[in-house]
Length: 156
Image (cartoon, rainbow, N blue to C red):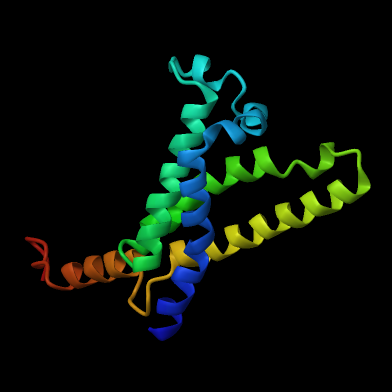
């Protein structure tokens, strides 16, 4: 569908550019990410610095963005991007903590922009591109199989 071919790269562009930046320059994002990461690596028994987690998140965004833009596994790519956008938003746009009114307003806009991107990713993650969903196909297959089962023995 033409709209999908246009919309996917448009949605993916921010993740590709942001992912590249996070992979190449994780130190600039680490202080904000620390607010979300906290002691998570220790809790999970990981030996990772915040910069490593920022770089990993950036790699997910870069890879997911490229896959989404190319229309390769778009539902899986969108789901991965959903998972990476939540901590990115919570780390980078904590408008409720900002005491400067101008900064608070700017961060609120960025936060809401990310919420809008979450909405777009939800649509992309559940879009079947005009084909029936997996749930519908599974249900239909079960119905079809039930129609072709032999009658139980002893019943007429």
